[in-house]
Amino acid sequence: MKKSPIVLIILVIAILIGIMSTAFTVRETEKALVMQFGNPVRVIDEAGLNFKIPFVQNVRFFDNRVLDYDANVQEIPTSDQKQVLVDAYARYRITDPLQFFQAVNNEFALRARLDSVISRSLRDVLGEVPLEVVMTPKRADLMRGFTDRVEIEARKFGIQVVDVRIRRIDLPEENSQAIYRRMQTQREQEARKFRAEGDKESRRIRAEADKEQRVILAEARKNAEILRGEGDAKAQGIYNDAYGRDADFFDFWRSMQAMQKGLGSESTTYVGPPTGDFFRFFGDETGKGTQ
Image 1: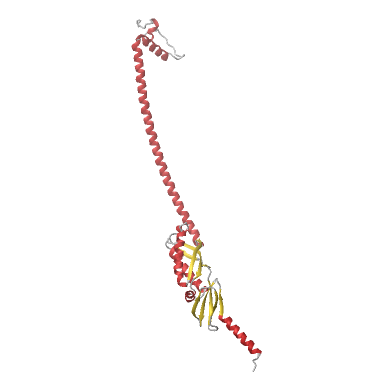
Image 2: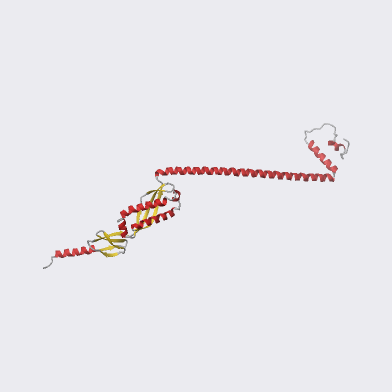
């Protein structure tokens, strides 16, 4: 009895469907997990053609590339009780499909778990330092510690965290003005302190300069008196030496000097006889005449 062509066609289609449901391809950018009645039975890490039991087993595919995750903005307190808004992101790769499936099942559930890990790690890292450290180049060291914490926590999800970064750190809007005013007050206090210290130092320097000036003037006066005394002594010595050489001439010269000083003005008038010691050279050139 000949088989009907329709039966043959159905048989061929059934065979093709069976082959198609048996074979599957894993791409280079994927990893696969073979499931049997909802339970994982085999992990496929290598790309290529693979086979499974039709109608009994199915395949879950997981992306093997580095994936990006943007964490929710977190409000984190620092050690000096300053609230900051932290916008972070992470890059990760699924390394163990079986552990990933058992821990979170899918990427949507992973995002909720990863967000919790990032938030907890941020609080642990930023809660140990003041705000001023977060705003300095030391933030790079904090990020390394932050990345290590997240990477260790994320291993239990079957993923490897390649990198975690803080995209931006801001102050909450309601705290910005208060913090700004507090910073302004602190700067004004520091400015007043610096001005007071500067004024104190200025007075000290001025007092030192005045003291040094008085010392220099006193030394100058002392030296001037010494020099004046030495000059007077020299002049007196010269006078004495000149008087010793010719006493009569010296007596005459000194008398003329005295007369010049005493009668030097054109308005000076003397009325009386030219007698007395002051005029003794008028009657006798030797000055020895009788008074």
